Image (cartoon, rainbow over all chains, first blue to last red; front, side):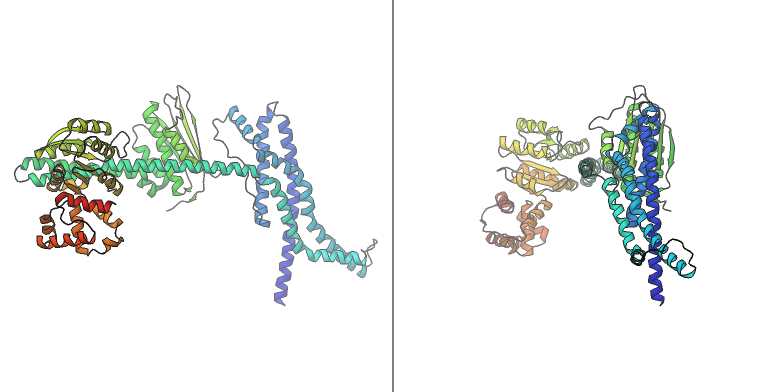
Length: 418
Length: 214
């Protein structure tokens, strides 16, 4: 009995859950319709100027709604709908130009228009598919209630449904736990047809991925070559010279102790330099402090060794994955190295923050500006390295300064390790 | 003895000049890049060239290429190549240039000053000085070859020492056996490898290396 009771209560729960979800879909689609109207109005006022302010707001609200629907499709029906949006460009300013850039970014993304289309087309689909389970349940229960009422009290003036009608409605009631989820899934598929990235968008993305991967491979090959060169010309050569001096000293020790002494002193100096070079090299590959203290500590340590004051503002609630930490660390290090080498600044600042699932690092200075992204330059290298993580780099450096390098990449933070 | 030196790292160049000079060698030119090295070798025609494999401008194997080219223009020019790592391919290219002393040593070997100077002299005298590392890599490549696998471990040791350019007496003292025993091993090796045992000195070494290099 208890087993049957378990099955029955599960069916009831499934029915209720399905009804609520369908209802939510229907209501949300109406919210979407309101947003659609808001978007339309703000787009119409775009020429008038006020739309420049309103359009990004309404379009982003619509985007959030669509993202919620994508999430529900996955959680409720197991239909995964990928996010189709183009990456947000690094904003250069917060003023009017920034707003215009926002508008351009949103309006040139085909996914925006497909969101809008879904906000309209989705209404009848969501209302019909969403409310059908509720209707089936209500109709079924109504049959029972009407029957009982007529039988017990003869209260109902309206005639109860015919016999076949009753069979139909009661059948529908018992069908809800099975048909309901199917209806929800049909709704998810319908949503996927407009909310998922198009085939062309996917192809473009695959192309971009292939390109950024090949850039990353180039960057890491160049990096390995640099390390090999540093070792060959640095520590390895020092050790060879060390051996040569000691061997030479060994040979002349008896006949020419003074020369031997000189050679040994040189050898000692050489061993010290070899160690220094190895340390520098290791720091260039993966700074120990980065492994020990994460990005926050490593950037702090980096700025301590610089010959100019650096204002730091680092707010990270956790640690990014080691490759991301390393990429951002070297990006900041390269930007700061440029500040020292080229900007003529007497003050710099570094800001590292995490919000909206993106790690943002900004390096600025009060120097003379005029920096460019030369091919083969250090910042180009940084850009390539960041591209491997879908990250971007923006440089503003008007002649006369100041120079600001903004680097941004999407990533997740793990909880702070203790 | 007149030496031309090709080494781009000042530290090592100066050290080598001092070392060679201390052993009564006359460093007639010390250059730091491939093109200059080729010019110096062809104009000075030294008794021996001591050359770093990797030189500017390309920082690849400029030194080796300059040495090979110089040996094409000055047949029999003795060349001792120094390198920070052993590359059997380089040994092979070097050995394929005919005639004159040849050597290929790891740079580490300069710490054994006496042996290094000896190697320079062997090469200058038309002999061969192959790094044990080069020899063992060449041997490893042939480890499963039919004739080599017939050699006993002791015969392999003797073969490796021969390829380094050691004399019979040198091999005997190294392995702590009599010279007669060494002679016996060598004759066995030559029989097993189908080489002519009556060849002497450097020609013998070259025969072995040519065999390994084939």
